[in-house]
Length: 449
Image 1 (tube, helix red, strand yellow):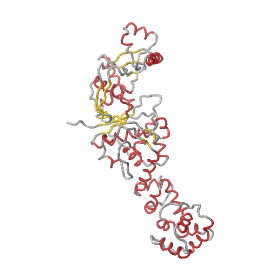
Image 2: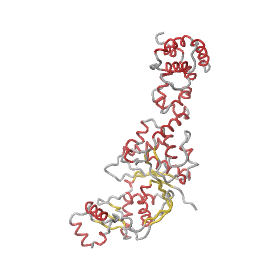
Image 3: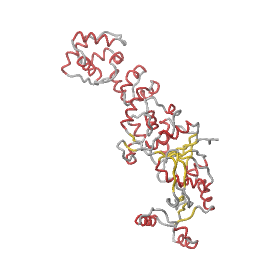
Image 4: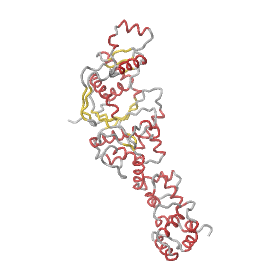
């Protein structure tokens, strides 16, 4: 019988979410919803110096902006007693042992091993310390950190992203699970939480593969069911180089300020690494039925801001008025109705582009027509029909201007567009003209006339 599906997204509230975090969140959410499973949001806030409530609130805000919800919520800072209990179980089982080396001493050992062409694996010297030697070290003021003793056997699993994975015994260091001050490290706290919250699948970046080997053994040592793991290639930039050094400019807060639509971002991240290109009508809920981890390739997906911008425009071009009404009002476009939005949306790459077209229809712009077209525009103004105007007004007016001036093609249309909108491209003038009105059109075609 298949196990109940439950995934977790576990950000650290030490900064804002960036696109790498967001992709992990989106993929976990889609996987869980596709399997009719649950999502746990876990704040990995054990870094007391850097974790803040402000960052936690910002992460929650960013997830909600993306449209991601969750069924359970927990903070690691509230679970210290559970980690302490796990530590005691491991000590009693003989799987956790005290080590007294300083960071400088450990660094020297690693350098010596590398210099000899050996992997920098911990030599388990602490296991040879007698109780008297341990007591003497503590009398010197040394406080031990605690390492988990790995078994001398290979660690194997079938990864949902990478396929069969095997780590040979002796290729991994016994990991430190508890700091000198008694605080657990991520390796321990994550396993305890995954085990006690019955996480069925862990979906994350392939930079965690070695951690997974250790954690699988830790799951077993603590008596928890081992989840299924899926490790996916990390995103790189459009140039194929590592993205991590540039993540400071790719926070979700920054993307929001740049006018990126959440629907565009989730569609882009959900398809990135697959053979299927995102579409402008790909909603987060709409992606659920077809989501499949097997669709992701092994090549590092390239995050391309240009592709995201193109998709962002496609999303805007399809958004109904109901999806933007409140945001248009918040931009100060009071009275921006459905007719206005439907007229201009296909000429917006960012929502704020609607502001220009609002000024075209209801405000003041600086006309961009060439001085040599002044006489032509004055004649076009003279030929403007009286109101009321409707969808047929523009076509009738153009025919009169064409007949009266002899102009046609670009020489006819471009001066009119530049005078009326200050842009060489944009919505159909036939749609804008009734929104603009005769008085405003006259002022732009023949200023002071």
